Length: 419
Ligand SMILES: Cc1cc2nc3c(=O)[nH]c(=O)nc-3n(C[C@H](O)[C@H](O)[C@H](O)COP(=O)(O)OP(=O)(O)OC[C@H]3O[C@@H](n4cnc5c(N)ncnc54)[C@H](O)[C@@H]3O)c2cc1C
Figure 1: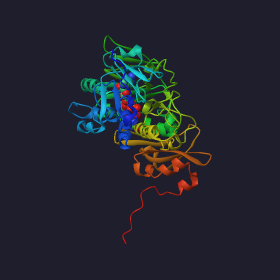
Figure 2: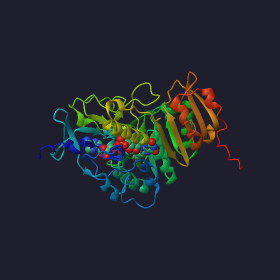
Figure 3: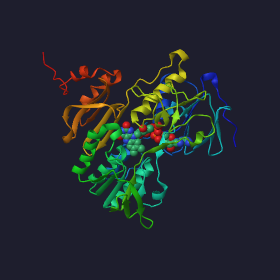
Figure 4: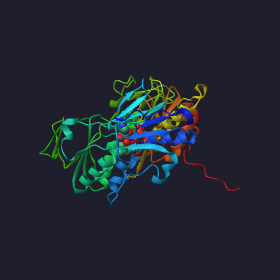
């Protein structure tokens, strides 16, 4: 076992980032951009440098040629500029905040002045189902390759869970020409984010594209010898299948923090600056339970943009004087591509919100809806209306008066009048 790497405060604090995905990379990039000259070590369990996950459930499932490498978030030749001690293919296994040391699974230890937790989340597994070869979850590039291979020899795909990921995989299955069954235990897909009417529109979209959508019914068991052959539903129906995707959410990668004193709930709890309750330890990305503007309580968002926003926040706060630290101000944003439809959301809607469809047509899967509470805008949701949605960003950020926002109509961009 090697001794801990000594911290070298001469050129700035030694920052150790655990997790070499989107939020870890963005933290390192931002630290360098802000002028941090001290050592940065980045530890990642996967063998690949940071790559982009959204294409794994979209274009990479559809493209004809098998991808040879994941879609990189930073060109290999540009890593040198970051001057990182990049340790890939090794997992952090423990944190000792008293000694300020992270233990790695290969027996080495890394000392830090400042630690950033960027370990994200992994797909929630259902052990009773996962032993079948053709039952997949989707989080990593390898998951994507394995699913791609099965999809190409399959004729019937069953997707369990009609959240954003499940909807994307179901859509990919239809585009590839498969028979697709989408099973969701809740009566409406994405109800928490979109509400009943708009969530219903997502179910309708899949039905129109030929998906057999089963709502309000749980999966009882998966049957088959070695490979899944049948999915048995709670209502007694049996779905014959030859590939299954389990898309029932994610769990944060926090087990390596057990016993460290860092408070974990469904993620790593932090204050508005991204600092955990253990000194010199911050958290970014999918793992962070943090106060987002407009949210009634700290929460964990698995949004691509939130990973970058929290990374920028923590990089700033790590280097800032205490009085110059800032909270997160960026409005939460997510998107999902299903078929030729882009679903987007700004802000944090709540089931109690009033929803006004202010443009387009829900039935045509092309609309803009504004969510509000007590006359103040809380969120905006759109299908296939990216530009009008973008025009709501300021109103959502400011919790603007609903009546004022509605005056922005018509939502199509105003034509420039030539002088
Ligand atoms: C298939 C898919 C599609 C998506 N599509 C969209 C989309 O369309 N729109 C959208 O807004 N968001 C989307 N997302 C979400 C978005 O990709 C995530 O929010 C983002 O990847 C979070 O980045 P992160 O760095 O926090 O976590 P991750 O990307 O998960 O990176 C964390 C890294 O830490 C590593 N790690 C974990 N534990 C340890 C440990 N103990 N030691 C060392 N390393 C460790 C992991 O192996 C991983 O490489 C999608 C996600 C997936 C999986």
